[in-house]
Amino acid sequence: MCDLPLLPPPPPPVCWAPTSHLLGTHIPSPGHAKAAGIWLPRPHVTVPAQDTRHPARAVAGRFRHGSSPAAGKTGRALSKQPGVRAMFNPCPSPCCAAGHGDLGTRGLGDTGTAPPTSPLPPPSPKSCCGSGRGAGDTQRGPTGHQPCPSGGAPVPRRGWTPGLRWGGDGDPEGSSRCLPAPLRGTASVAGTMAAQPDGGEKPFHIISPTLESLPLSRAAGTKVYMKLENIQPTGSFKIRGIGRLCQEAAKKGCRRFVCSSGGNAGLAAAYAAKKLGLPVTVVVPSTTGPTTVRKLEELGAEVEVSGQVWDEANKRALELAQTEGWVSIHPFDHPSVWQGHASLVRELKDSLETKPDAILLAVGGGGLLAGVVAGLRQVGWQDVPIVAAETRGAHSFHAALAAGRLVSLPDITSVAKCLGAKTVAARALECAQECRVISQVVEDAEAVRAVERFLDDERMLVQPACGAALALLYAGRLRRLQREGRLRTPLASVVVVVCGGGSIQAAQLRALKDQLGLE
Image 1: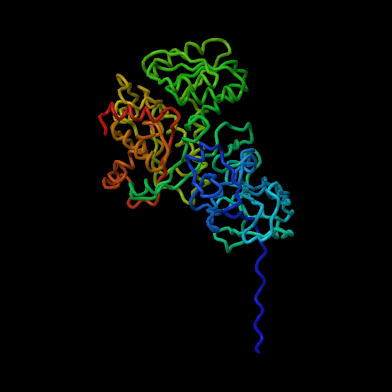
Image 2 (image 1 turned 90 degrees about the horizontal axis):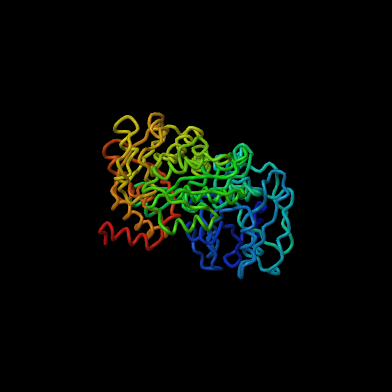
């Protein structure tokens, strides 16, 4: 009988992982999860997916571990739901920002049981930690997770079986990095509140998911990532910049906000005003739908209808802003608004391994464009081209580029009312000189068809304004730009900003199709 060489002992466990039966996951809300998540068979909880290359994603039995760790009370609330037995424990490790996400009460292969209400024992000081991927995290590694300086591994505890280990490169064999964990209060993952880069007041927007879309990738012939701004608290990216501007005005003693809007900016201003405990007047044009008006009033806003288009409503808002103590919250033309929107690009920098070959977005007044350009400069991506989409009849940016100066459209005739600024912001025209901006005008029918296809493909209903950007992919505009040599071939990846869906319902989509004669 020969002596067999002794095998080295298995490496110590790093993190706990739940089975398919026991699950704990942070999500922003059921509606957000439905919009951006993955439906699990058990226990019927939707896990919002961050990035398909997220290091903390695994398949364990029938449980797809789509770990989008997030901080806050929503995770604790989920752990109390029937069938969900998971506890979320703070990590005492000095290198850990908050704790460990997605911890279950049983590990993989665990034969013992624990009472449903029993929390996991807290990790030891040498337990794995996760520094999260977000604004304010200054010590990220290449994948957005910093190495754990605490050293060692968690001490196995009696009655608990460790789960999977995760390394720095995302596969279960490595051990140089730890499973990402939620940040206290300012976690920087999908569905969590963002942190101010300067450590100031916590903003009102969340860090939205960046997801790869297989249907959009097939349509475009290249990998497409969606930046899901439609799941922001107010349904659009507007809360980023509008929220920042409102916070700054409140610090300076503002007594009332006044905002002109076709919908999304007003919702953002009303939301911010409610958070700040200040009154707000939102002036809307007569084309604003009753659903949007109702949402504004539910947020506590005083709604005034003035004019046929946004430009006319804005004149009335500026008149009201002359009242002492009232501050005008411009929907797109203000430096603070642009800086707020720039956070979107910083999040892309954190979530993508490499910079995209193009960013696709819709242009109305130009605020999102200005914010994205500011963000590209901040992260060193100035060479990334921007494809800016507008619908015909609301194409003030395209007209300005063609003329080389600001141009006012005679009227807004497009169904995409959220793009309805007759004159684009001067800053938008400057952006076209600072970065490579490719302007594209799509037809209303293309935008509405894109909205419908996106609903079928991704189960999310967005506005025609957002459909303008999606139409670049569905209608073959991206491929055409490649054939014309205006975009590189091949494209490794592109990002489309799914800018908003807070002001549309299924009935409105049906009405738009009827109006445009679409089957």
